Length: 215
Image (cartoon, rainbow, N blue to C red; front, side, top):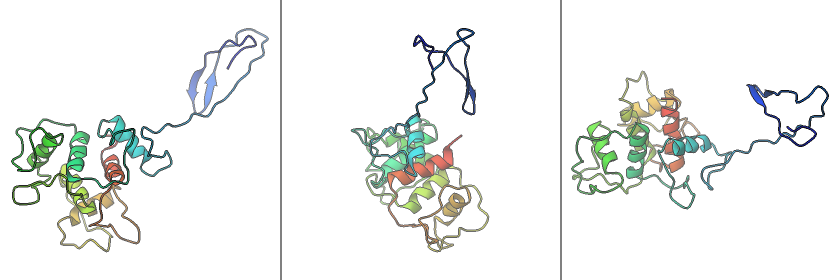
């Protein structure tokens, strides 16, 4: 907003789209130009209209993820076990583990070493057997929700989930029921959770956002 001489007038935001300003004189001509604020995505491959946009933006601002390089997030790429545990660790505060894990396939100097050690100490994972964690293996939706449930303290759940593809005796049944009841996931449609489906980077960040936002 400017006066007739082109001088910009200071505006005071009163909320709800209302602004006030001090009149520069008793009789003046004031011109106002309103420009719509444009939301800018932190990653070039994440549209501001995507269902996971707010989650990705939150994760980037919180230091949970910096993307995959070159200004990209890789929303549709599968999330590995190393990535998901690292995301969880960062979302939970990146606390220092008491010691490194004993997994033979987790190098002490790997970016995810502390995250894996933290996950073991907190009962989030015991690995995949034979003394291995399998950091580069693709993480499934059931594993992702199970990790998140355990990271949240494995709270008691009343009743099961409504998903037809989640058996009541499945190791992840309580985790899925908890996630559904707490709005972490609504499944993949058709009454299905998609237990064995690959968990994408967009999906895990969305799960984390719904579970940790505001905490």
